[in-house]
Image (cartoon, rainbow, N blue to C red):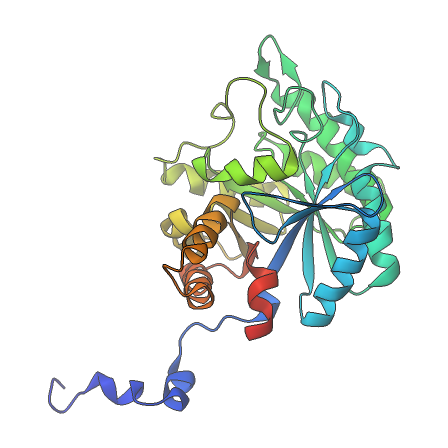
Length: 322
């Protein structure tokens, strides 16, 4: 039927009917909060480009996680800022490393919080790239060795999931095998399968102190112009044993999220990245937008596009209103 028999506004008249027919519903269980941890005690350094986010020492981070859990956050993603760096990033596999310490401290005070560790070398290398440099370029296969060692070390520390974000070819399979060989066959791997060489990562690099010393990451992260390549990346990681695949960034790549969802039957995560977060905060500071409503709309759009899981710095701001 057509108008006037069909009137689509009938189902928009009141909050009650809008709630009943809403197709996409955002919940606290969809969200993961990223956090930054560094050495020291009593440290809570603000990240200027990411208002409300901090570099925290382990003691402060553990208390913060306890608070987040009581407010309804059920999962966090950890990024470490080490005291020292090396040429390969192998320092990240130190049993006494900063993320390893953080995992133990968090599990002590809030054991039911789901703790995910980012697996990458960029924050641990002197040059700021995501792997070992050989003849001026990041060497794929030697980098896989350090990624596997880092994953096993964090598994031994008690992490609930590892999330390789480096974009090296083959790392999902190598990490899966290393975990299995070291008696962690149940530990899931959430692979950053589709990670673009995006301009939206700037604030994160300030927070994680991981800006490349020279050059860029376009030799291993994806070209933002490419769409079909994302399907190849996802297919390869699924074949290698990924339990969850991830698209990063999220907001400018909603079409990619939908493509992945339409083509693969696997849980899908999306990362609402630092630059996307910072733009909202800047506009809110100017009074140009309603921050709470904008954030809900952004996160709902990411879920509507097909993401089952959303990693977002907005999590701690929005959680109380979900």
